[in-house]
Every structure is written in structure tokens, then in C-alpha cells.
Amino acid sequence: MSKLRLYISTAMHLKPSQVVYRVWRRIGGKTPLRFGYNPKPDVGKADIGAIPVLPELDFDPVLLSRFDVDAILDDRIELLHHEEQVDWRESWHAELSTPLWRFNLHYHEYLLPLAKAYLDTGDVRYLDKGKAIVESWIRSCPRSVGGVAWDPYVISMRVVNWLAFYGELREKIDHDPIFVSALNCSLAQQYMHLSQHLEKDLLANHYLENLKALVILAHYFNDTQTFDAALPVLAGQVCEQILPDGMHFELSPLYHKVVLEDLLRVAVTLQAQGMEEAETVALLRLQKMCDCLFSLERGASRTPLFNDSGDNVAKSCHALLSCAKKRFGIAPTCRVDLPDAGYYLIERDTAAGHVKVVFDAGAPGPECALGHAHCDALSMEVFVDGLPAVVNRGTYAYQDERRLDLKRTAAHSTVQADGIEQSECWAPFRMARSARCWGKRLGEFEVRGCMVDWAGNRIERTVWLGEDGRLAVVDAADPSVRLVSRFHLLGVSAEGPELCESCYCPEFGKALRSTCAEGYGAGSIAAVIDLASRDISWDCDR
Image (cartoon, rainbow, N blue to C red):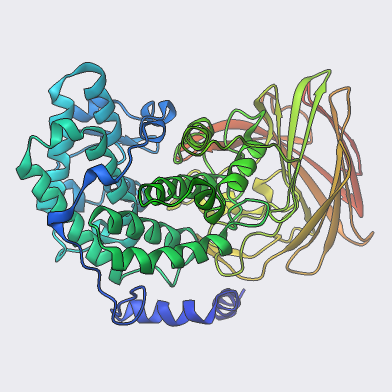
């Protein structure tokens, strides 16, 4: 493939404004909300009491379990299943692990487990360590140094964690006016910097994160001008990014949860500003987002692995839905069809147990933001009594030699034509020509999807779940097209001519053993998976 052609094909997906802003940012141009805009934070008016605390999210047990607070006391941090010994004076700028790991170091999410440990035990070491980490960042990462610390996305994540840490421990932290002053001065600087460097070239969840942080900080600093300017822009992004069926338009269950948390935090801020509950829920599409999350994860023990998803980044489904219920009275409704996202669900009590099938018959993602898209059209994940049985291989990491391998068609429980990738994933966050896909429901326990890959091969897949616990999958194409169907299975030994050993990554930084079953055929392949035994019978020429 010609590199120039790939670049051109990739750029053709983008909005013209994205191309302009990318060039502009590369030459040092600013990207504020609007030309001539400057926020006016008043440190003297900073009020942590104006930011409602959300312990349902801040102290999500799943989040807390990711961190060893006693190890943090010893300056050891584990993020994404990788631990580093940290020097809080130097490590902010060190080349530790991967860029994503360093981003997470600067997010400061681990302040929240320290806050919970202090509240639970009264041990002041946890409080002091959290404050010392914040103070070390302020001293070591001045705005003039720049780098990862001042990346707009990183700022957008960190400021919310700082405010949550402060809010949860307000009674104690307010007794340290020197710390509060340093914190507020730094927040004001980060607010000013973020407001001038919005990620209008990337858009998608990055831009939404920026706007979330601006709205919350504007409220914190009583900057009504910025609040009034940023909120309509955020609302416009919600209309664009949250599909009518409630799914975030990047079609990643992980980022759906990340964005839902963002909007829940914005929602309580709007309530604090006096907005009515019903108006807040409607403006931010919270009901539909919760319906979508509940639908995808009911009957599943983890985040479904479509596009860039993993189970150790976002807050848990339970925490998010509990927050929505407590704060806004939202009771989620399960929907078996998410037609705008392209996800179709089958749930059935069978001889093998309660089975949930999540079938992907949607587009790779929005044209303007395909960085998180995988070649997973017509793929599926199957859970039996909540546990994964048929899987996609996941993501593992963003900066890793396996990155592209895990985005390719063969890494998913789907079908491929003539050895051609469904879409041209050619760099870690770049996709050139892409597949088209759509689906429909044929019956309560039967769905069908159709995909046309970038080369024009048209494939149809039909999935049916029987009461006996057998999952039937039929792939069909033109008789001249050579097909290969793959199913990545858990709990199966890699024995037999159609089986090979593989691995899958349910969490970032974590790889487990799996088995890949392959069937080959000209024009059609039929497979029946016994979900009790994981045995597969094929009707193909293999």
C-alpha cells in the first residue's frame, strides 16, 4: 500500500475543520472556544462547595481495587497492570513505561483511593500522601515546561480528579489554606491553558472531555461568561456524539462509559446551577446512555470488547448506573436492538445456562474519528451465566507492537474474505478505506448483519441461538469469494486441526490464553457452537 495513498484516504474521513486545526495546532496556534475568548477565573471565588461530590463514582469499589494504597505510600504505582517505582520530583517527566501509562500517571485518579483509605481509617498518611503528590506535580510541572502534563486531554482528566479529592476531604483540606491556595492557583492556570488549546482537530471524546472540564471549572471559579459560552458547545457535542439509541458514536463500550461519567459530573454541576432535573437528563441524553450501557452489560461480567475496549479504565457499569439512579432517578431499560450503533443482543435461558450474545453489525465508527475502530464488523461476544465464552481479543495497549495485530480482522470472532482486512487499519490510530455494515433482527433469537469490506466483498452473517445452548452462525458471500470464519474461545484446549492457541486481553496490560477456531469455505460457511462444551461443528471445506 502506498503511504501517500493511505494518508490521503485517512484524511478524506476528516472534517475540513479538523485538517485546518491540526495544521494550526502543529505550528503553535491556539484553539479557544471562539476567537478572542479568554476565561476569567477568580481564585478568590473558587468554591469547592459548588461542586457536588459523587462518592458513588469517586469510590467505585472496582476503581478502588485497581490500586494498592499502601504501595502508593511507598511510592510505587501500578497502572494498567504495570508497576513503577516513582520519584515524585522527577518521574513526571521520565520515560516510564508507555505514553498511555504516563498519561494515566498525570490523571491522578489514584488520589481517590487515598481519599477513601483516609476516610475509612483516619490514618493521616493517606491524606498527606495525596496532598504531597499534588504539591509535587505543581512544583515539578510548571506551565512553561509543557509536555504530557499540559496535554489538553490530560488536564481534562486531572482537574476533575483534583476537585473530587478536594471535595471528598473538604473538611480536612480546608484546614490547610496554603495547600488550597496552591491548588486553586494551579487549577486556574490549567483552566486558562485548556481554554486556549481545545482539541478541535481530534474532536470526539477528546473534545467532549475538554468541554466537560471547562464547564465544571467555570462553575468552580464562578466564571459565568465561560460557563454560558461552553455549555451550548458541549450540548452540541452531545447531540452529535450520543446517537439516538444512546450509544457514544465511537462505538466503544469503554468510551461510552467514560463519556457517561463525564456527563453525570456535568449534570450535577448543572443541577447546582439550578437547572431542573428533567431538563438536565434530556440535555445530556442520560436516560438513553444508561439504557444503552445496561443493555450491553446486563448478563455480562465485563465490558464487551468491541473497538478499543478493556475493563480497567472506566468506572464500572454498576457505579455509573447507581449514580444515575441516586442523582437523577434514572431506571435503565434493556433494549435488544441498538440500531444506530449497530449492536444487536440476544439473551436466552438455555441448556448451557443463561446466554447473552452481543452482535456487532455497525459501522467502524464516525467518519471523523476512527482512531479507536477495529476490524470487528459482524463479530460477536458471547457470555454464558455472565462469563465470556466467545470473545474478541481486546486491545492490550495503545503503544505496543501488538496494537495493529489486535485491531485486525483475525483478532475478532468474525468472518474475512480472501484474506483481505475489513478496513485498512494501518497505524495505531489511523484507518484509511473502511468497511460498511448494517444489520436487522429476524426473530427474538436470530439476527443478521451484512458487511461490505473496503475492497467491495459483500458478506452476510446470520446468528441464531437455540434453547439447547447451541449457537448457529452462517456466513455467506459470492461463491467465488474464499471465506474464513474465526471464533476466539475461552475454556477450550487448542487441540485439533482447526484450533490454534491464541490470547485475549480483557483489560489493558493483561493477556490471557484463548483458543482460536477457524473454518474455511468458498462462498459459505456454517458453524454450530455448543456453548456448554465449546465444541464446534463445521459445514465447510476447512
